Amino acid sequence: MKTVKVTVVTPDGPVYDSEVEMVSTKAKSGELGILPGHIPLVAPLAISAVRLKKGGKTEFVAVSGGFLEVRPDQVTILAQTAELASDIDVERALKAKERAEQRMHEQRSEHTDFRRAELALQRAINRLAVSEKRL
Image: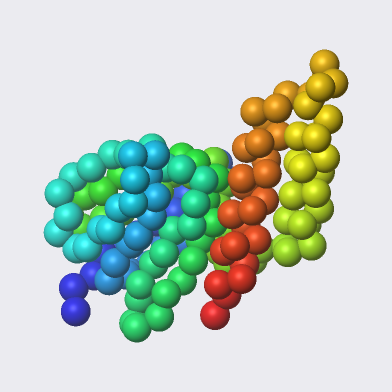
């Protein structure tokens, strides 16, 4: 079966580098499915899971925004943060979710940045959802 090289990179370094059969992810404009030979594309990513189909199994990577670059033989994801499902610290993600929810409830305070708290909550929920999909 044909494959495409996938690299997920953050400012801290590479997170994933392998040949896969299909990449599925959520861009800000909607869901994307990428197979080998896909037309070139650049798209901003939403806070979401990247699904990587390889050898009959699916691997998951939680990304917190960034960009997707597709070439016929390579897919590069430049993410602000990214974690493999197996590397997610569930306890830390739960604490981050609780902190974000608390900040959102304190929105009437002049010191609370509601949008920042909302994004932190989305990131925590995404990490928890991806961690549940571990193999």
